[in-house]
Amino acid sequence: MNFASTSVPRHLARGAIGFGLIIGSIALVPAVGPVTLLAAPLALVAFRGCPTCWMVGLAQTISHGRLERQCEDGACTLTKAHPTLKAAQ
Image 1 (cartoon, rainbow, N blue to C red):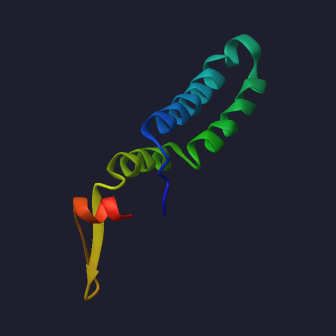
Image 2: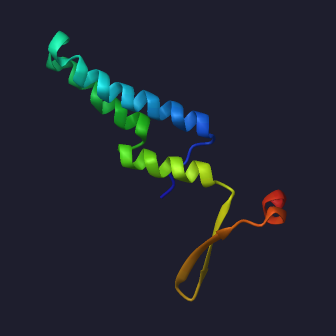
Image 3: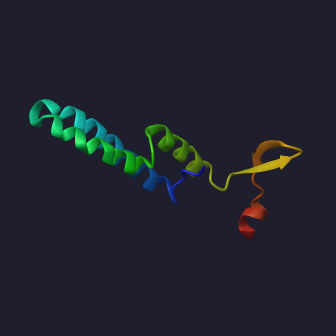
């Protein structure tokens, strides 16, 4: 699956929103009440799933265009992308 964003800053912004919603919804329970927990599911929208999905997407976003997968005879390996092939795309 692909959880990558178009840029690292955009991905980090999604993470800040997601983690902010989770932390804020839990921290505000004593002041506002359990209704603030309704903001926590919005974090799943920002994360595009769960915090783990966001972390995988961060790794994918950072490595986008730097690694390529090569599969032969049922075995796949990751190798550095060739600069000439990257420029041609």
